[in-house]
Length: 171
Image 1: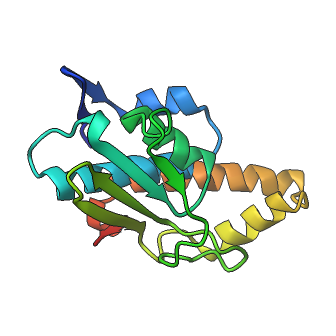
Image 2: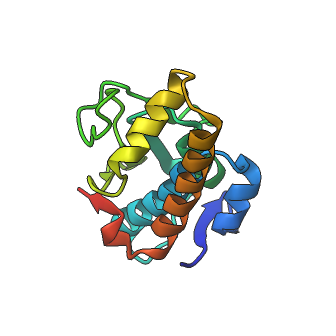
């Protein structure tokens, strides 16, 4: 995995995954790892070998998870610029049986070009959704909380290590 390169005005910025991890913190690492790979896929689809410009990017998110938001904000500054929108009704990549959250994100250029990047359907195991539901409902035991944190860290590493096309789909 290489660093993401993006222009901020005239300055070329190199963003490694560890930079985002430091910004976001240790929680929700699975979503941070997946978001990093989603940005890689989106930039490749929208720009090819060219380097994207922060100022021309906007993102429509299928959910408001802090891990995704923080990763995309660190890379693109879209939220700060008023170009990050959450659409909880977005119909694609709804894999969580307990919510209508979408694991799809639309990256758009100021030119109107856009690409939808979504998590692969089977990337997250069923136990992930079960534990996250219990967490939302404040029903996790201490052991389950530890299991969930370990699972999130493992999923993060998996997202970062697998080939991109085994983590996300691009349309």
